[in-house]
Structures are given as structure tokens and as C-alpha cells.
Image (tube, rainbow, N blue to C red; front, side, top):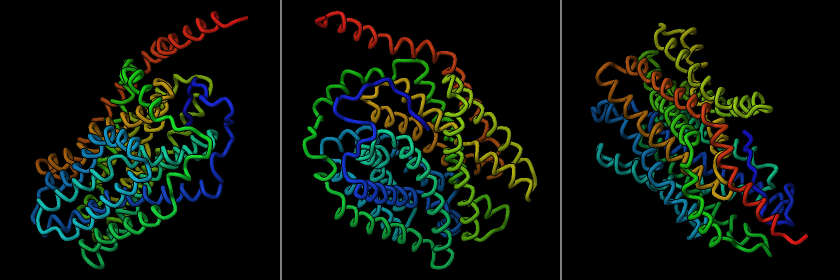
Length: 445
């Protein structure tokens, strides 16, 4: 996806194609950061692969299982904003190492849990550790690459979450089938600790700040105080937050419950169910990428069309997923489910682009932290938990037939944003334009 802003660089000597550090070191940092992102989502999603085993061993309800998944996203959503601010004060590399170590140790703690309560506490700690990684991790990467590569790198990080989910479900299911569910958690924890150790050795804060480039932490905090109201200053940007979060309610439910769906209705073993669900999680990730690409192409001459793409993905997901869960098990159902999964998160790219357009470039990281908050509190956290509660009452298939209806509210939010977008954009850019004209009038001739 391509982010459009009107902000100018604060460094007149900088170039959009300039490499702040060496290319080899930049790509090494990216690879390690991407690896930790995979670990992040593998630790988060491995639980879904072992739902059937936990349900049988601890006699848990579907609502209890859903809460074990939802608590991670809830902690991430609530803590993303404050943890991101603290990372700017403490140092980003130090914060990332602390976060990765915490979620890895917490995942190991899940491996030795003896009850639902202990598992819930472990999952809560996983969420606390993962809270700031997405926003801080991408901030580290973007700071050492040319501006011209930012869209590509941002897209890779968005897709990386889905790919990590694939690995967490598929690998976790296979390990659980072979060695038991405890080893599935243990494998994810050990992988995270190993990556964190390598990251700590290779990535240094001093090497991320090129010599001669002054730090601007105080200036950034001042800009934050000045521009913070702009995070919620228009109907359209609030609509983007709400629409994105509600649409991810569906994607979050699918990521959590598809392993159980295949186990219960296709009679697959946990290992095979995890592999099948992993393939559909990959489709959801590809939908995020394709949604952003399609949005950029369709709206290249008319940015307003991004809203139509987002609403179209919501409506399409509603139709295809409703059809899929009404069909009998078999190839036709799987095809409809795949199309529905592809569309279920396709609005993520257009929504993020709208947030970037409607907020100042100087607080872009804070704006994306706010978007992450909305995605978690409205979608990724309640999606699995509400689906589990519905499954206890109507059965899992019945719950999955109800969940796609959330897309109606998501599409409505996107259409409201589309209605207000041009007026909001004009109103938000007018003050800066007037300020520039006033400054120019005072400049000496």
C-alpha cells in the first residue's frame, strides 16, 4: 500500500533515496526484525492449533478457549499506545529485546500450565510482551531505509503477521500431534528466545543512528502534544479506525477457530487441521497485500475510491463467508471459504492509507498505534471470544454463520468515511496551507 502525505522532510540535506546506514546492515536488521515478528505471531496463534487438545484435557467451554486467544489481542490493543511512547524514551532496541524476551518466556510458561487460570495468566503476559512490537519494530526498520522503500517495507510487515500466524498454527499443530500440546508452546518460546539473543548481539542503538544526525525526541514529544487532537479530529479518520477494527473482528475469529472447524466438521487430526487452517491464514495474509495493491491501482487518479475498495471487501466477505458456512462440507465450501478469507482482511490496506492521509506525517507512528488499538479492541480481541461464546450456544458452525454479519457495520463505517473524506481532507490541510502563505508573505523579498 502507498501512503500519501503532504509533509516535507525536516532535513533539507536528506534525499528520498539516501541510505542512512549501509545496505547490508539495514537488510540484516530487517531480516531479524521480520523474524521476531514471525515469532510474535507464532507465539500468539499456536494456541489455536491446540484448541481441541485443551478442550478435551481441561474440559473447557468454547467461550473459555476464545478468551485465551482474545486476551492477547486485548492486551496488545490496550498497551500498544503507552508502550510505544515508553519505547521512545527507553530506547527502541532495548524495548524490543525486553518485549521479545517477555513473550517468549511467557509462551514457555504456557507450556507448563497446569490449569486454565495459569494458561490465562501466561497468555496475558504474551500480550503484554507483544504490545509494542508492531509499531516499534516497523519504526526501527523504517528509520534505516530510504523513504522510497517505506511502502514496500510496511506491506511486508503487515503480511508478516499473517505468515507468522500460518507458521504458528501449522507448525504448532504438527508438533502437538507428534509430541503433545506442551511442546508446541515450548518450541515457539525457544525460537523466540534464540532470535532475541541474535537480535541483541547484532542490532545496536548506536548503529541505528547515523553519525551527525541529531536526535529529535524532545521535538517529537512537542509535536505529539500539538498534533494529538488530530488523531480524532475528523469523521472520516474515526470511520477508518472503526471500519478497520470491525472488519478484523471477522479475520480474528477465522484465524482462531478454523483449526477447530476443520477438526470438528472435516474430522481432521489437530496436526492436519492446523495445516489446513494455516493455508487459509495465508490466504487472509495475501488478501491484506492484494487489498492494498488493488486500492492503490484503482484509486491512483481518485483517492476517494479507496473507501469503495474497503467497503467492497467487507460486503464481499459477508456474502462469501455466509455462503460458505451454509454449504455442506466439501470442495465447494472450501472454495467459497477461501474467497471469503481473501476478502475478510482486504480492507486493512485501504484503511491504513486513509489514516496516513488524514493525520500529520509527524505523528504517523502514533496514528498507526491508534489504528492498532482500534483493530485490537474492536476486532482481534473480541472476535475469538465472542465466537466462542456464540459457539457454546449455537455450536461452532452456527457461530461462524453469525460472525460475518459484523461486516455490515464495517461497510457502513467505510461508507460514512467516504461521504466525509474530501471535506475532512480539505479542512485538515487548509490550516497548514494558510500558515505557509502567511510565512511566505512575511519573508523578505
